[in-house]
Length: 67
Image 1 (tube, helix red, strand yellow):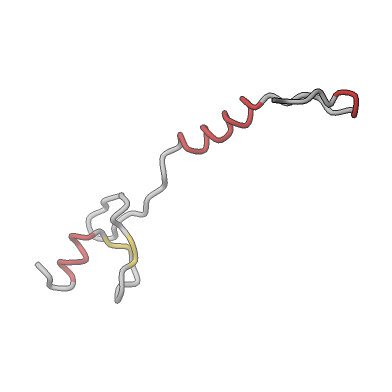
Image 2 (image 1 turned 90 degrees about the vertical axis):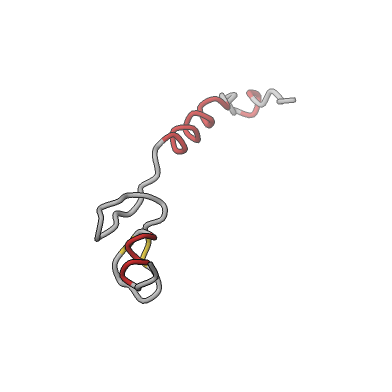
């Protein structure tokens, strides 16, 4: 239940404006880093332990000799 606060000089606010701002933030695609070896862009790409450059899981395993 919302109360009428116009007597106090406050105007009613439309809650749909707040929702549209929140939706627009979540609608944009996340920005993922790019693997330095294979140029793959995705959530698996990160600077891993012992590596100073962003690598995807496959390139990291290959560099570390895990394959």
